[in-house]
Image 1 (cartoon, helix red, strand yellow):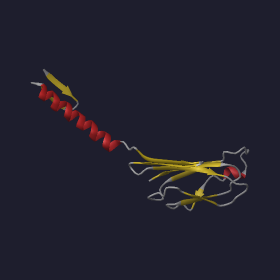
Image 2: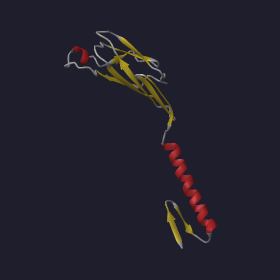
Image 3: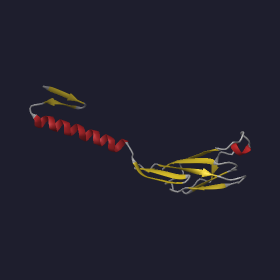
Image 4: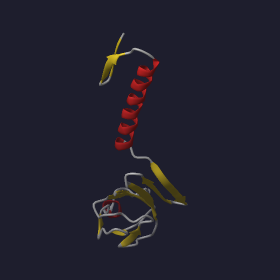
Length: 131
């Protein structure tokens, strides 16, 4: 009987041949999974601050900024990034109507451990991700 399974072809002459074929196929599956999927290494949450770190070095973290008319607030990361090529964003999360406070949504001064943002007039949720 001829067997074709992925890239493995051949004649099955006994149980040993079938076992070899199944072992080879499982090895291929294991290799694919090891190189293509990261997995969660750790997670932390404390009130409104949190982070997740993955096996490939990817970091996700976030929190809530609160204030009443605070200018130039620094977000300090619980987990430092390996480089400053991360993404960080926020939303106003408040009951505003799209005034100036809701328009100051950017960040500047990005480094491995922190970033700066503008006017905080409500509870503003922030999220950063990268390596």
